[in-house]
Structure formats: structure tokens, C-alpha cells
Amino acid sequence: MTRYHTDVHISIIWRDWARFRPEAMIDVQIRKLQKKDLYNGFLASLDSLRKASNLKPKKAGVIFGSISKNPYQITYVAVKDCEVIGSASILIEQKFIHDGGTVGHIEDVAVRKDFQGKGVGKKLVKALLEYSKKRGCYKTILDCTDDLIPFYEDLGFKRYSNSMRFDHLSKK
Image 1 (cartoon, rainbow, N blue to C red):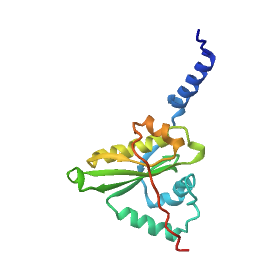
Image 2 (spheres, rainbow, N blue to C red):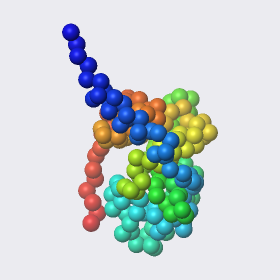
Image 3 (cartoon, helix red, strand yellow):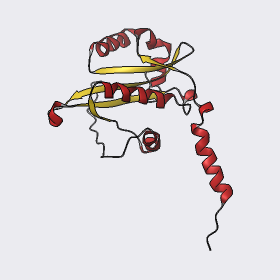
């Protein structure tokens, strides 16, 4: 005879449901990154990935200028109360295969730690998926750590292949 521990099962369901309930989602505006955003939370939001808030203003401006001129790259930000609390980027790659089709590569999905788990990352990724679809991409891909797989699977991503990395020596 199998015994079910319904109290444990119910608490697991409740915990999972609580993560996705509408009250847990916060209202944010998703829009394209603007230069004024650099020191209005954008670089600080990237700190959840790797320290970026210490970037010198001149260098940040040069990087922003270069990225904003690239028609195949866009960064979206999540704004709450006039401050950037998250961001994500996408690069569009032209292919020879798939009859010259394009692929969207999502990069650097970052949400300030105090806003994580409130739907901000999901809204950013959904906006990038819509952008990729409108650009005619036949697929959109990303790399993530194992702990983030459930987050992306909830958005419809599937595990597909392995990611490999080669670190070049620093010039410093």
C-alpha cells in the first residue's frame, strides 16, 4: 500500500503556485535602453551577473554608442518608478543555413536582486522573444546555468545542446 503525504504535496504545490501568482508580479515598463539609463540603475542591475556599476562614465558612453549603432543588437530595460531594475539583450545573427534565416541570441538577462522572483526577468525575456519573432528569426537561443533551466523552461525554452566556452587571456 502506498502512502501519500498530502501535507507535503500541498505545500510544494502552494510554494510553486505562490511564485507565479499575479500579486507576485510587479508592474514595470519594458523599453529600449537609453543613454540616461546607464547610471540610473542599468549598470547596477548588471551587477547581479558581474560587477558593472564601477564602469567609468566615458567608457560606458563609448560602449553605449557602439551598441546603439549596431542594428543587430538591442538591449531592453525594465523600469519601475523611473529607475532601471533589470535588463536583457538580444543579438540577431544572419545564417547561411535555413535559407539565410536569422537566429536571436539572448544575453545578459539581469534583474536587481531585490526584484528577482517578481516576474521582471520573464517580462524582459518575453519582450525579446517578441522582438526576435518580429525580426523573422526562426529560433531564439540562450545559454544559462543549471539553476536557471526551470525559469527558461517556464517560458517555453527546451534543453537542446551543450554550451562550450573558451576564455582568452586578458590584455591586462
